[in-house]
Length: 299
Ligand SMILES: *[C@@H]1O[C@H](CO)[C@@H](O)[C@H](O)[C@H]1NC(C)=O
Ligand SMILES: *[C@@H]1O[C@H](CO)[C@@H](O)[C@H](O)[C@H]1NC(C)=O
Image (cartoon, rainbow, N blue to C red; front, side, top):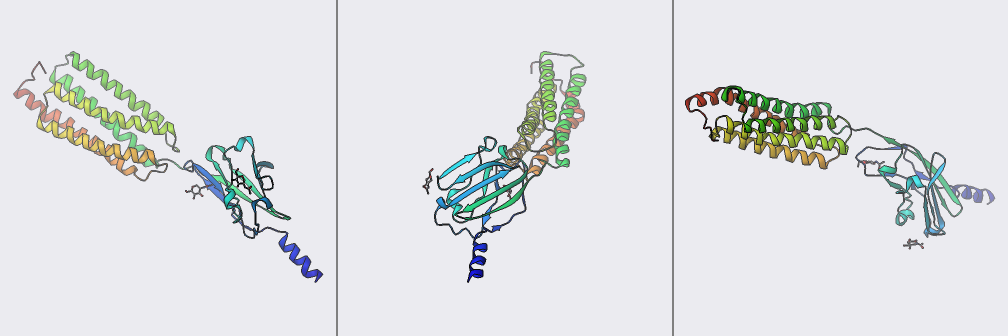
């Protein structure tokens, strides 16, 4: 009976874990969970349980059931376990991402005289907000649309007003420069990489500046040869396409790993295409119209 007793003692002295070797998190995990599951908890009350989480030899979180009290290391203020899950064997440590540091975490659980520990490696994985191709297209299309705007502006000033700079043209020039600056700043902030407030702002600026181009287009056409029904159609298409890009933008900004990148990109791409159409119209069709009926100076 002595051997049986010692064997059962040896078995009962040890807490067994449902082991997890490693977990990983990305910029998208707001809170991270480091799993720790005891299989043979067999505790009746949390006052029999003591939990200690360690990181690099330092206690970062403890729960002392006899006192019903938790302590945190100052660097892991948001860490905690669900006390209500403890009796089921769940001592998973949760913390806000801002506290998380990659490395080995050790979960140590004591139930009366039985104890055990398990170590879990926490890894950080870098995930890019957009794919490299998406990043390029998101910048290329608006820049292309902007260049086409300057093309239209050039045609307008050279072809329709024989280079004369009136007030409206100067206003348009200033507004165009402003939009150019917004796009450049947006493109600088929108560096490829993980989701961040910085590159989300950059993307916002890029898309906003594209929208401002619609207004500039309106004035370019208006001051060049007036608003024709074709111009109205172009502007309406641009507004609709811009709404599509805006929807894509909001879907991308609200998702840490965007799956709606193609919506945004097709919006920006079609926008640039319509802009090209506007330039062609201005160059060939519009100029003919201009010769037929010279622009009203009062517009
Ligand atoms: C991060 O989030 C993913 C997806 O929601 C999840 O599978 C993973 O377990 C999380 N990582 C951590 C450490 O919590
Ligand atoms: C431990 O404290 C919490 C409040 O901090 C309370 O809700 C809970 O009932 C307490 N548990 C025990 C076993 O005393």
